[in-house]
Image (cartoon, rainbow, N blue to C red; front, side, top):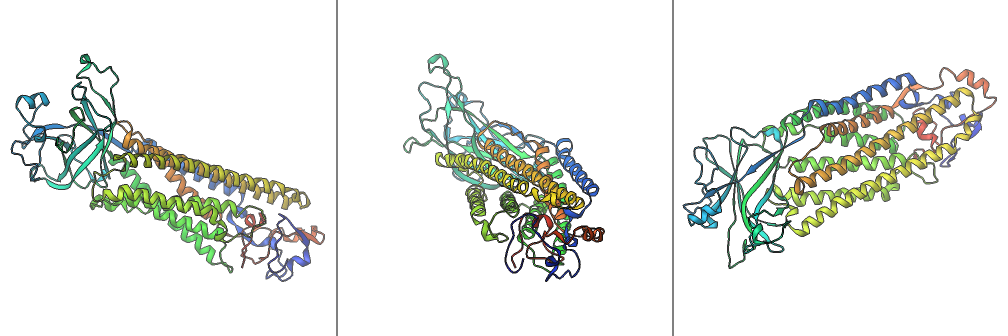
Length: 574
């Protein structure tokens, strides 16, 4: 086997003399070359490593299930109806407090407003976040607010089809109950009503409430202040048809959702612990790769790239968000997770492809452009979608892509398509793993020709490799499930029920699984210093009767590719 020729059989049989011709090993049997740790580590040690990783995986689930509280908390608010007696809404210089020493002049309902001849334009709906005698905290990380109107049925004032509510909204903050309010954002927002009246529209049913969908209202990327104040006006202009045909609004209800401080601390602690762990094993892995006298093959490069992306998502920069008002942290976190998803999905495709026994000349990234290209394109679409909402929210926290019909349809279509693509990707990955298993099984016919020691050795290698592939498939399935559930939950935050129930154990468990999987790959695929066959070379040479099994391809250097890699017909094309 000279030059660039390739033999795609699993165990080609060549004479012992030809096998050593031109090899830098001299008289050393090529089976004594160093492989990967997964090949050369004893079964007992490998089982111990597997049990330790499994215990850490169980611990990561238990951290979320037993130590961390629920990831998010939902708090309900009923807006207080304040009266702007001095008509300052054009000046924007006065903030209306629903309670406290400087509370506003209030009315109970609109009947009282009519009796006192108070115009609708002079009514301000005020909401103080949080509730009395409580404070917000930077540990809450973000604040998401959804809105619902209580609209009473009146035959003379019904909700028209396609009714649009126009709101003049302002957000202010302060860090002391004695300080003045500072404006944080102000905007004129429009929300389309989607209400259903289940009873018959008769005089007897007047006063009953419509069943209205929740509406997206506001999202803030950091909670850097203790107190927040929302002032909402519903201006009426009959000439311009502003807030006409929206029914009789009785009350405004808000639901504020934020991350639990306890969950944030557990999450930060996990990141702080895992970052040096993965970083150390990554440096150790690449140091062993670079110590070899051949250049690294594609599989080794992609494992290292996966380690870099895992370290990037691990770095606990969120600690700074506790002390700084970094409203872009949500967007930055999405970008980091998107990069990791793209790297992980690409890795699985290349990992399986590099172990396929076909006639394709692989070990080049360009071979996989048809599979990796759609992943990169999908990740770019995710980034654009995120920028369309959270990017705009950096300037206007009241903006929502769900506020318009087109935006809602696009967002829903995106979530559905993303879920379908994730499932299709997993099915394609299953197909690739099936191909690898089928091809390996087809090559097992060469095993009986080996000596017993070598046959048992390679049967063990095949079992270890298949087990690793099944673990990869399990990780892929859990990742796809996590991706779909996270997308659905985010959708529910916008248009679903009042509360958001997310399993803390699932969050911490999947995050721990990613780290453990990357850790295991870099550890098991690192070059081993142990050489299989050192202790058996004399006996094997005596029993081979001039013939042996050649497992290498064109590279027979002592630091050549791993045996599993070569067993499946792959080689480094110099």
